[in-house]
Image (cartoon, rainbow, N blue to C red; front, side, top):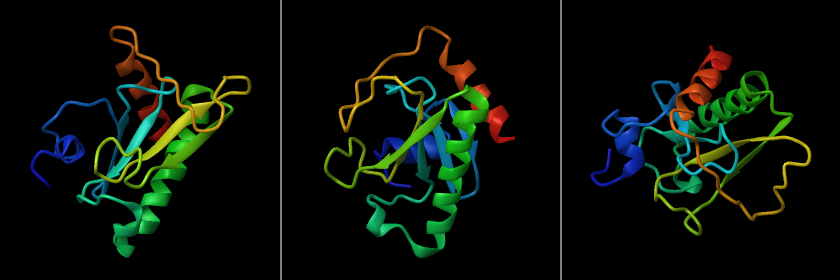
Length: 137
């Protein structure tokens, strides 16, 4: 854990988040500024800044959890598909490796790399988190 890192703090349970996935090595939680509701960030618990720095022993598990989250978008949210992406340094708002897993439906308006953001209504995020946790169970 690195002091001052928001994602390290979330992974350690020190900063509240709508957690949808927890393993010994990874944590997935709802993005507070989602592209679409259910947009989840997957982070390694170990502080790693970019994908090239991810230790080899975490690589397969990281992809495995991305797969699980992508399936949960379908099963838990009724999405038709998902968008899975990572930034490395450029456009990386928090300097801790994170993968975006975003639910998609045909005609949802997402084009290229322009990511318009939305907000959850009051008390709406916990329901989305629970739907994803149920689908991951």
